[in-house]
Image (cartoon, rainbow, N blue to C red; front, side, top):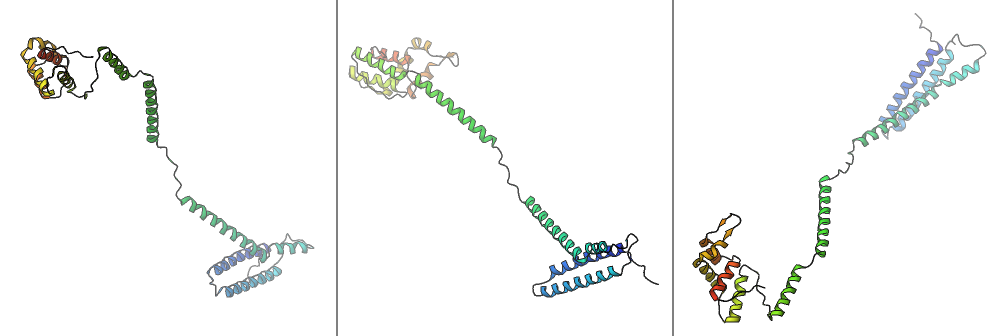
Length: 268
């Protein structure tokens, strides 16, 4: 039983497939060849390509022309043979293979770039910004307060000038006293020594004032009104605090000591 004869189109289609298969085979051989075997492998590939080209050329000569082929068109047939020659097919397939490899390499590079961690965008530190604004506002308020204070009169300076003028009028000399809870009693102690030659310590004056208040409750009790409790303070607890602590002296103590020493006490 004889084989069915192939048409020209069938032969050309088969040649294309065989050429593609050979390109795939030779490409694999090139990749797997070691340096020592590369020359031998390249020689083998050249033999395979040459054999296939010769076989394809022989088969194309013997193939029966199709019904569409007109006589006297040998030049066109040669052009068709040239178009589908093994050399052109090999070159075309090799070019396609290179393009695929290039595309695969580009895709791999792109994938690696996407996997690399992205530099995170710097987030706004709203808490830090809020604190900075608050600090700026505080500085502004402080500057406004400083400017306002500069415009205010120096009350301490005015007070000292007035005292100095009063002392000049009364022919008095200023004597500095430590401004603590004992300052009233310390100043009275100084004046007793200067004017009457009486030596009295601060504690002695506190005790003398406390005793005088206790002996004359009718005079001093009305002045012991406590604004916080809206009631009169106990005279015993008040005089105990006066005698045993650094409680500041006031009008009651001045009155009590003035009566004790029978001397007027004038506050400038």
